[in-house]
Length: 483
Ligand code: TRP
Image 1 (cartoon, rainbow, N blue to C red):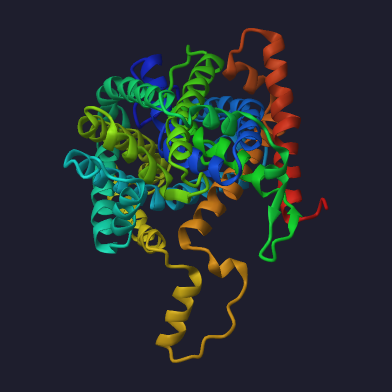
Image 2 (tube, protein in one colour):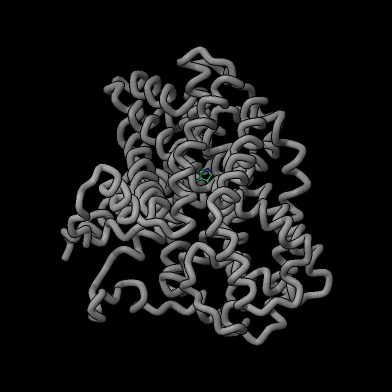
């Protein structure tokens, strides 16, 4: 197998870490984690997420980096080649395909949210939040997301800047920017946590995030007000471990393909996981004190960050500056994540479809842009039922009873659930099975270079048994086969 990838190589270990952290740290940590933790009741949910990161996420991240570095190609071709090398069926390449498709689906809504972040840079800089009440802040947000043309414009801009970097090549496009901006984002989050520390909601926020209450984790209240057992919060917490670490679709695998032979995979993994987790927890500690000191609803949904942080910016000294800076940095975090969502597909088009990077980026960007339009209508509150009714109306049919729960979801909710909670865990489970059971032991050991024998055994055990079984059991319980 070739020693370097045709797409280039990272110039140092540190650059790989920056790129991988850039991929991992993004809207998932700062926008998504707080709102899903809020929706599923805090403490116990956060605990399941942390355990999943440690026992499922870490070993699978090591596996993906290892696979990428051994295969040196896009996920589709890497899986194909490594399956053949192990004397197995070439159908393993479809794992790469599922990942590419998941990447397109995730990026389609990710880009819409990143567009909202961009728009908020200007909202913050113009002083729109200064001395606003929480309800004023809320109506700024709801006015904003009820304007599809505006959202479309920002979505378009975000896709263009993302594809511009992807077209140039990930390394040249990213290295320098990330070095400065990522540490800055970290510092600014600390400032926001410091602001929360001085508010009266801080104690309650800490309690909310870290005091596990099992009830919120395994019960849901149905439409008739009756409590029912459910495994969904556990699935969502585990799914988020994959999402936030960029696992299960080949992004980290692709970055691993550009990584040097001498780098310790376990060390870089540990670094990436720690930074990613700390950023998510800091984001929670910045947002929830505002929620509780203003009696807002922690289960406020995807708009949570846009309805809470501006309250802080509106009342802190220098808030116009800090607010604009925060959304600028969040935009960069989203940008570096978005790049990794499309890189596997672009690498594949260059390898197998004989395209230039530019052409591949244009193709990829166009597909994502089109898909994203569905999520724009979700932001305005349009559900599948609304779309269905409109379509039926067009063809002149009466609306039949569309009562099922499914139809009351938005496109965004369906895509988010299908990717984060089904495709990524499934992809991760198959990756674990491939490395744990399918590849030859010697190939794995030769590539992973974990010098400590016990650590390597622990990793293998987690991959062979713990990750696949955990994902499988959680899937079964959500389908309802486990009572
Ligand atoms: N991890 C990123 C975030 O938390 C999003 C992301 C980038 C991602 N690449 C991915 C998610 C690959 C799943 C798979 O914002």
